[in-house]
Amino acid sequence: MPADDPVSGGRPGRSLTARSDPGTRITGEPAAKTDLRVRALGEIDELTSYLGVARAHNPHPELGKILVRLQELLLTLGCEIADPERRGEVFLTAADCRALTEAVRVHERALPRLVRFIVPGPPSPAAELHYSRAIARRLERTLQSLAATEPVSEAALAAANELSDLLFALARRAAHAAGEVDHEWRPRAPLSDSDLQ
Image (cartoon, rainbow, N blue to C red; front, side, top):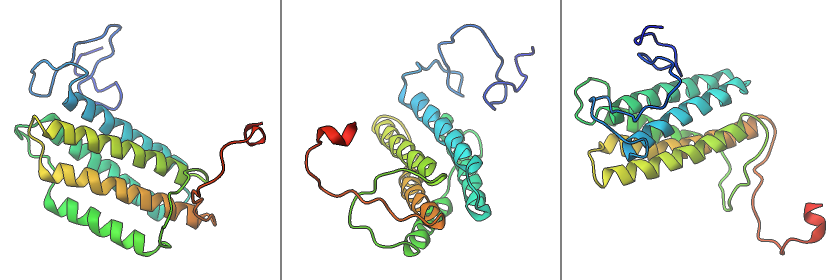
């Protein structure tokens, strides 16, 4: 199979091999797979893919459109993180961040005010969106760590922060659309034998 055949993981220019490779950046420089930039790219891929799982379990067309746009935004973010010198033309903008911030406000206004933590769970796609939100938080932490030593744009950092907030709001809205209420965590007594049997 030609090395430039786009076959693996939806990534162009990737060929299947039976061996591990040491990893390189888009610049061609060597990069360990434990490198923070490589880790961030993996988390972007993970989140993009898991939003696809949420879409597969989603019965609401409007939510589906939002999730596709978020997947597209994440692919743009991946292009930017892979190309820190910005030799390409694909990167996030202040307009992207403003749109995310406004979306958080709009969706939060449509929800009851929270005073306690939420226990994530069914129905779909709310559960998948809660998990996606946790991945987004991990991605944000990785990007913050990366920004301490290497260039990361303010737009990328802001987008990662707003994205996790938006996914949390969307998870709640998906649950409410299915007729569920928020499963709020409340302080309780220590576990008893009957709790887990």
